[in-house]
Length: 595
Image 1 (cartoon, rainbow, N blue to C red):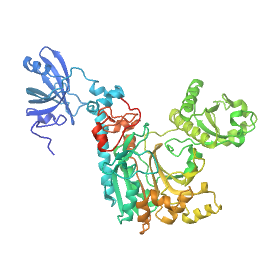
Image 2 (tube, one colour):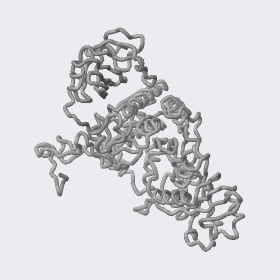
Image 3 (spheres, helix red, strand yellow):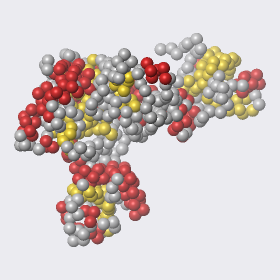
Image 4 (cartoon, rainbow, N blue to C red):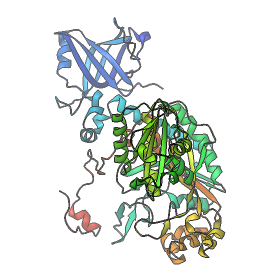
């Protein structure tokens, strides 16, 4: 396909040696002017496709270019010739343009830019977000957005090839009683009532299955009023939302195990991705073995329980507490490096880790070694200890010890050579999540993950729990997470499509049939008309692209991201509105507002 338009005959990444002698017109941004003499300069012209060098060789043309600020858009007509000193690093490095005519198409009216375009990633983040349109001119920044486009196109093609139909679901919907905070939209024609932007198309995609559609997907925008973090953008995000009728957990797994690895291998920073089937790890096993439900399987370390042999040592932090250990073999870290590692773990986990080491001679020393006096042999056997091994230890309530151990494992695995096969994408499924948990604030039974999931055991297991024959905390659900390199890409589930089971599941958390009907009227009623068994998942597009690009911040792969405080620095959102608009929406502002 030709890039020829009324403004150009070729783009700035197109010309090669075979074009020498041709008269061409290029259009783009004037990236730089490097003067070599009074009448000689090299000009770099840049567009979406690349850069081309323009050589100024006379006073008149020099005057023209000197009157144009950098980052102005210009059209340059001239003759292509071979460069005396080719630049092998550039696709256009064999040629240059001798200009005959220069036309300013869009003048940059500022002599100074907020930052150097090609070094924008070194600039202050606030400046980058405020001038995002300049930041995106940096080819290194732009490449992430191009990657995102290519990945989304590949996902669409793969899902369509698997027989899924792309269907868009509503953006204005009802407020959800579950999950994160909603973004509310006042309804002008219905004073005092509000729409909500969807946190996810969850109910709509289940209703599509009830409506007779067999395989649904969309690249779905989702909106949640939650705080930002490295792998989560505030406000909005996108996910590959999918649902299948007459499908089981394994059917969902089979689709993504076929769709994702080729895309990750083709577009990723690394070209190796897990083959199907991905490892299945139960939630409880993941917490015990890796200290997290988001394990990075590129790391070969595991967590071991040493609670029993850690009691009665005379060391108060271990007494009556769960104690976990990670043995890091081949470790030659200095004492200073170990202290730094432990300090970093404490910052991230919120609890102090402990340590001891086996030196190159097999002697146990340092840290809490003295408290294991008399139990050295037991500890060596429990952890299969070798020479040059660092033992990191976490203690606390079970959940606290697991979390701290998980942080220790992740940090040590990345720090100590030989424990992490970093250049690959390693997927796994975390399965068998608990259906219920005790709420930290309420102290009562609550849903642990997704209230619409099918309990493993169906109605029978719920009735047993109701009769006291089964502890509700021992009920598991057909819920699953997809994890890649320690990043949770998605949660999914086999849905609870039976109204009787749904009502009984909600009764366990003190909500009756009337509550279910009131909170989820469309879904409850639809299921009463005969619903198929169905299951689905929704991997996050932003997180996938972040992993593929090798970025640590999700903002690097979003075209126009918000800052950590959910502010659009470029557009000035959120912003105040006129009183007239508030009156039309029957809204009165109460209390103080930001300037």
